Length: 302
Image (cartoon, rainbow, N blue to C red; front, side):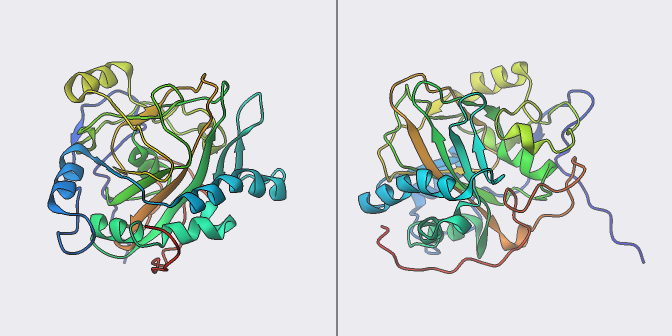
């Protein structure tokens, strides 16, 4: 007996531009009383697609995390988990950060982080991806507008929008150092993208994404409807945002570097299948294919 056909509710990487698709899944899967988020926060997440939680990580932990940006690459050399800026070779991202750094795993499993993820996704979660991002002063290159779910669906095989990201600031995030920009409300619409997935696309897309991005016309229409907001925060603040929220960041031409820890929580009930528009799954260090639920631990994280 053959396996049942997998239905792709969010086709992308197409030959021609297609109309937007209305999201069918909830944004918030849990309820009040199932975690630390009160009704106003749950409502904002559902309607806007993002939520800021100040002072999620204490100053000592932030300092330790910043030190990991230098410590980890110094021990790994040319390891593929270390992504460097084109040209300058400065560290851009450290993938599988929770494996390479015990302090990152501590943060991911801490009260106020794991509890929020479980409440938003309605149950046990695992880390689909984790990384430390560094945007150097003067030369840090931005990330173009995109929906993470578009990539995680087409290249990793996540079937549903039951994934949430937590970006924890390790430096001050201001308007002029390449901070994250979001289009509120765009998480409720999926925007199919044009263009087939190149072989081993991750080798290029992690430095500069060219495939899996909406057209400029689509982005202009989305921005006209939703507007654009910036994440402005202090070290230790956490920005939670839905997997399908349209977001990006400009380059950092300021003298102030920016860095953050990026944790992607996925429901254990949303395990990846075969990629919906890619040849082979991306490497495990970019997109986990083991789904052991995270369990809480009590470090000095608020």
